[in-house]
Image (cartoon, rainbow, N blue to C red):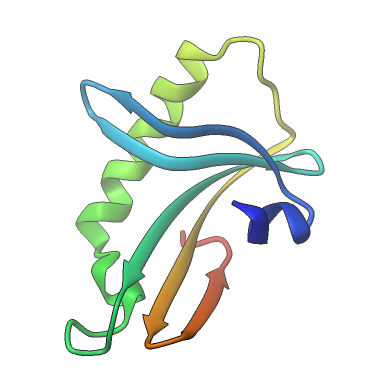
Length: 103
C-alpha cells in the first residue's frame, strides 16, 4: 500500500469481495481506476509471483470490474486498467515489481 502511494496511487478499496470473487486493491492513478492483483512469495521455490496470474485469473478479475463499479456508483474514470504487483521476500530483502496493463 505504501509503495503504491509513494508511486502516485490513491487507494480506493482493499480486499473488495462479491459473489464472483475478490479484488486485492482498487486504486486511482490520475483519471484511471486501477484494479491491482497482489502476489507475494516468501522464497523462490514456488516460482515468481507473476506466474500465479494465469489467463483464468485475469479473466476473473475482468469479470469483477463491472461488479465493483456497480457497487461504487460514485466512482468514475476516464480509463480502467488491471495491474499486478509482485512482492518477493527472501530473508531480509523485499522486492516489489509492478506490471501495468495486464490485458
